[in-house]
Image 1 (cartoon, rainbow, N blue to C red):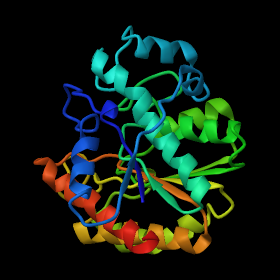
Image 2 (cartoon, rainbow, N blue to C red):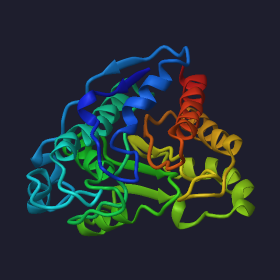
Image 3 (cartoon, rainbow, N blue to C red):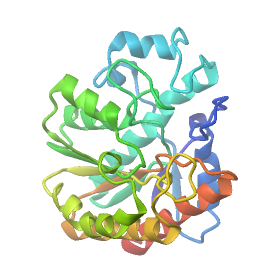
Length: 275
């Protein structure tokens, strides 16, 4: 299984959110699972590619540290990492389309970024950048974004409106589900939600760890329910035969080991389905 990772994705965000430094720890944890993994360096996203989903001046100002990033600072290290963070998602999606099955992007910090603004630890919307580039490259006609982060992907919705991108099928669980009482109904709904993206050329799956009951910014699914969530996604996607590229999305528990355990389970379920 190909994991699109480079140390160039990693930075100290000087923030509560671990998303800018989490990729390294996640990959190291996955390498201890005994699952055959191949690390591949992602191609960085260019300014032109970022500008397919964002206002170009906004992109240029953030990358030049003239404007704050999603962590609320103007860190040059974070700015340098951003092309590789979105590049991980884009390169993984290209690989999933190529192999017809799966690829993994150990990244996060996407779905709150709007067309021309940062928000909520998110600087650039790598989901929409990936969708736009894939369509521009004629690799797909439709893209599915299955966002199972705890929070509503408001930035994704904003960009969809700005671009009138009716060729993207976007589902954000955070807009609908947030209570432990809903857990069984949510899990029961997953096959239908995946099926709604059956006509997509690829599904971009945000396998967020922040819906966990102990997450300070989440709080409604148990460890076992999160693992079942991932199993249902991978099994139903495989049955449909639609390629999937998945990422880490949110997760804010401390110590970080608690978050890594959830991401480990996602990898285990992915490997169980796709080998």
